[in-house]
Amino acid sequence: MRSAPRGATRSLPLILVASVLVVAMACGQGGEVTEPERSAVERGRTLYQANCATCHGVAGEGQPNWQSRREDGSLPAPPHDATGHTWHHSDDQLLDIIRRGGQVVYGGPGFQSGMPAWDDRLTEEEIEAVLEYIKTLWGGRGTCVPGRALV
Image 1 (cartoon, one colour):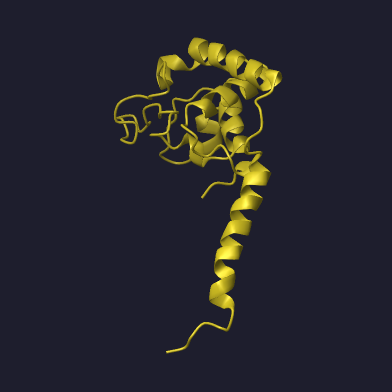
Image 2: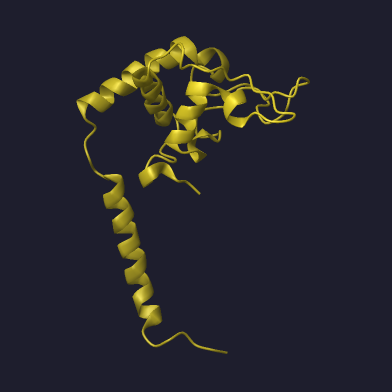
């Protein structure tokens, strides 16, 4: 049996601590929420309730059986809270889905989406505010990764 190179086991804790610190600094841990951020979330909440809650739920709970296709091949609206999968996607991908709709973004043979495009009804600033609000429903999941490339 081969043993670890001399000193390798001692450096592992240091590497782990350094990794945590790098991620924490990149994510802005401990930073205060600014007034513009708070304002965007509030604006997003209002827009979400007016435009998204009908399908995705007032609290982001989604529709029942959201992972099971309906007879027409579409999926029910997924939850936007921590029980769903929204937090797995990058901001760019989520913004694209909101802007252009699920059918355009994911469409293909046999795929049906009930997610409409919102770029003709909401401004870019409003779409971004809706996403900022949706992120508050994730319970801390997926909110602290630079570039939002989640695994």
